[in-house]
Image (cartoon, rainbow, N blue to C red; front, side):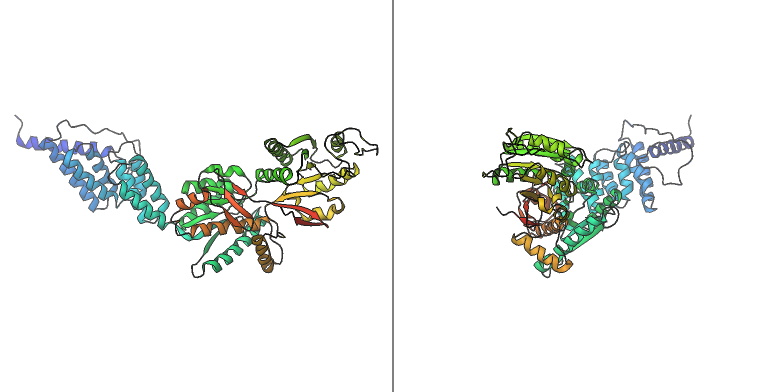
Length: 548
């Protein structure tokens, strides 16, 4: 016969064993320093078939009381492990009651511990509760980006949850709180390899800030400037710091745009990069680029040549390097789309200084009357007209190369009597060096650029005059683009209808047309800018604007 004292000992032993089994299967490991050496064996807690049994209920009640005492002692991890395992045993009202206690415990625990539980495969605490509580905890600590991440995950996974409306309202509040409409971040390489470009952009941004302060009067306009140090890692840090500063959007960066774009998209901050790398906007729908890309230049140049100048036949003379090959390919494609006639395309060596062979191939298909190298008259006809012809110019040669190389090519074109044809160049031709080294050969030049300080367009002229009054020199493309980018973001964010980064992003991605110092700008579906261009020529050894 088993005595009553023996039964008591047996029951005590069973409770001890059950406590060991329940606490050994933990969603949270003990804090560092409390883990014994050696690999711990994980034991799955036994499943009690009759959860309503009075003896089992008593055991669970003891464990629950132990967890409550652990909370009072500040041992939150231990308490949560017990609650978690008890949730696998409880049902009905008991489970609902314990879930309430569990959520109360989650509200006072470290977010890092809650993240561990969320990612645990041993948890019985609902993910919806963990995501909701993490979101609120992060919001209380003003870690808004993390709060939004957790609450958005909650809505995505549990759209019909009873708390869904509350979560939506919280997200709206966070969006408004994290959206300082009068503040934008400016990321520039103010030190490092590319600091010269960063300092040019900064001058444009400072001009924009002065004008915006005058425009908005008592409303303080804040530009938070960050130095990317021309470094990808520092660039990512700058994005994170600006996110915590609650800026409405970010202008820049210039040369580290890819790294910045990935981080800005992750943190859902509208970013308008100042780069000609059109692929940077592929990072996501919060990323835009405001600059003249090769595609924009070539499309504008071909359209102007065919539509405005009446050019019918084209030739390409290009260097065998990355720049030349890129622009040659774009020009061919643009001509094909516009219905232009490409007669010949000739390449020359990247370090070549004698271009006679390539030019002779052009003149070999020239119209009757063009002189060859010996001075004889050629009887062939196709593209290059004689300089004495009275007809309008209907031919053009596109030369995508730097001014120093163009200065070597132009005299040789003249030597072979290639005169009455348009000479088409990209924005790198817009350089005073070209005027100095080849002034007598600059005839029928057509250049495209994103800004011209001598323009008669009202906005461009006003900016040029104001800039020169401050800095004593004309602004360039980078200064003008930086001015427009910063101004565009502030003016859009200050619209009363814009109340979050998301709504700002949607307006930028819509059909908004911004009229700035660089002309009209709007963003394509892919995030790249569609910009109005400036067309230039040379008269009296000076760059002048071609007015349509």
